[in-house]
Length: 499
Image (cartoon, rainbow, N blue to C red; front, side, top):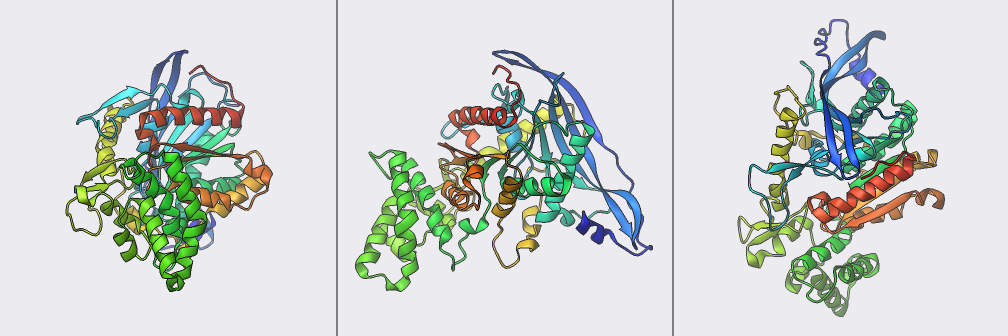
């Protein structure tokens, strides 16, 4: 890591490095009963030490411990490592631990929390996940530094790891180390990322390939964001207003604003308007005639479920944070950002923005409780350090210095990885009610990838009648599990175990 080497260069009088804490891992054996027979596997959980080369005054000082990174790995017993796939999974934020994918979709145990209108009450419950991806792939969940129980070593600065490039280097090293220690260089390998985790996955695909010679079989991009500019509302770029329109239309339909129409009919109209007439109307500015403006106001209001007066006062530009609080204001409700199927009581009937995301409120408690109970009682994790669902201050600290003066954009890194590796497959999962990474924005990014058709054919798309964490919705979770399993089998050619 060239940049890390430079950062580590210091006068010979620099303080001695902190003692290496060593790995702290617990191994347990488990059996998951499936319709096709029992699945025997080993779980390994705890923290592994991230070590980096240290150079002082041009002199190599060896490998120095920098951080302890939390992982949980599931490996099928007695499997052939040459044919058994392995999937490295993480969530996003930046600043989120991996418990969402772990306990909601991929792992062998899952949280039971209910769904919209039928949420479970505390203290919640756990259940076997008979659709777990472990049936078809070993799993390694990674908590980036400052999330979960991942921490810097004594004397280290957490902020040093809160950066786009540093994060990629850290997670890549954890992957390289695990693959090497477990003898899995010849296994089919996949990355599964959600939200900012898709940004990370695209960057990792290139980094692992170009700097470590590790070519992947596939990427699973769940609620993806590869171009932050498609979802920004900075007052000078109208893309965010356009790209969010189909999400607004889906949300309006969900809450009864399009009576007698199907969701797909509404989405088709919204997508067509966002693709042509809406960008044109916004680009005209004050050159719009009175009739043209009136028509735009009417169309936008009809699609979004907002009043024509509001759309007119907003100058045809609907900002998402305001939309969450405005759509059901007359009912005293706000709609969720992560999942607009959820609603919650508004703190104020006149507030410009909602005070909290009701969909986040609904899921944090169940997931946090389920993971910590599971980690200690079933995985026998003896680490009593506090578990950070979201790392404190990570998002606020996060550095994107590589993108200074422009939007964060990693589609080019995905392009590079797919150009070099003709076998790299990509699956993208979209939730219609996702207001954090709207489906239409992600579609637009993919539509502009600079790749030949042969590489574009390696990308598959799946849409779900749910939100950002589409697996909160039971039918979507079951379908997505089938889609992921089929993707891994197809991209790796590995043996199939009865589901």
